[in-house]
Length: 339
Image (tube, rainbow, N blue to C red; front, top):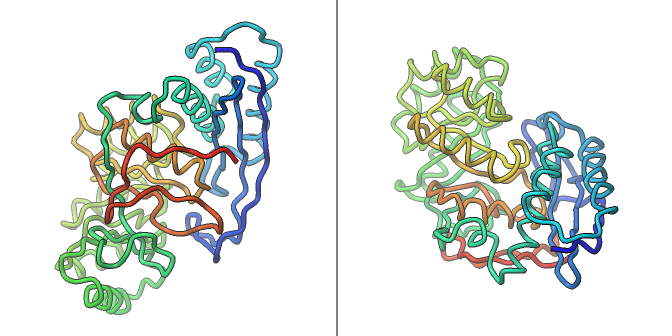
């Protein structure tokens, strides 16, 4: 394929209302778009490192994307997929959000040339629907009656207040609703054990990141002390962190953010390892714009992940397009529009 032009574009988009990225609230999302052109075709990817969580900075992601662009500007011959992915690995080395963006743009471009969705291009046996959890918020995309799995951010760690909140939610949603409780590293080991024991009668799918990511050893002790599955989110940064978490018995569930982990082959490596170790894997967005979220939807489909994943579950920005929902499932294929 002949690459005729590459554009790198910065963006700042204001959230509809202040939004948590990890434990901090933000008014805006900062990131980069990369557009790779081949004549009339355009593949788009998005890099948006998460402040305080991603291993690289916003500036480092932009530098990596521009390095990839410069490497291609002097190439006048038809370049194949393998060479493009090699350049992505080189310029995205240790810059996962940039590698995720470049791979997204490449997959988008090549899938168009084949007349396929990204999911079908990556795997002909892709899922034609993927499952999505809802978020307990007035901005939730999935309607109340369609919700099967509900994620709840817990900011008040008083056990009686937690129980009161869960009772209110069950009264509103019904007893069949499955709950995912995200504590965003807010507890210590003693309080985690106490809260888990007090709420174990509820229909809890898992407790997400109750302890600080630096206390990986405490997660094993927590798992041994309680019956509720424990999920790691902020603790998961790359394949090495996955191996460490599983080797130390720290998790029942891994929550993987492609912006942090990298591209298709990175996530597949994590998925294959977690399957072999019988640890669940949930793929989620990092509250990026529709470009990254569309790519993640296609990754979930191509990787045949049947868990309820965290993408397109809340309205984040004005004037964003949204895929077609069937209750709490997204229909595949979906297409990415040119910005």
